[in-house]
Length: 83
Image 1 (spheres, rainbow, N blue to C red):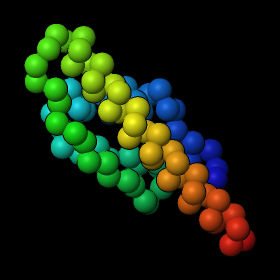
Image 2: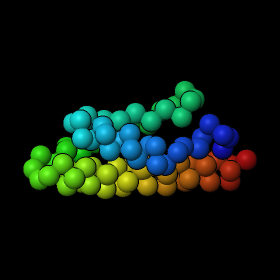
Image 3: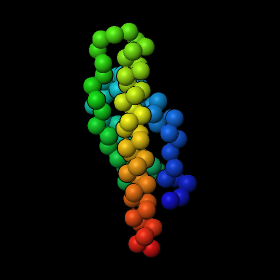
Image 4: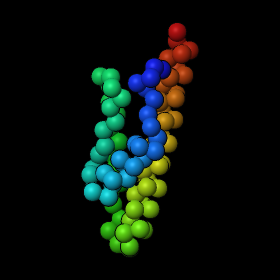
């Protein structure tokens, strides 16, 4: 992994939260290299207060970011074993 492989977890979580709130269907993570990752987003919560909607979106975004980070770690570990 080089410096381009690291992501700001807080920033990514906030961006995905906003994407969920805006009703986007997918979010593309581009790490500065040729490969990018597409995350399918859940539909936004349509009832409740704004705070409840935002909390729901942030919770879902955190789950997606955690899964993405675990996947990246596994890929890195597999590449390290091959070298």
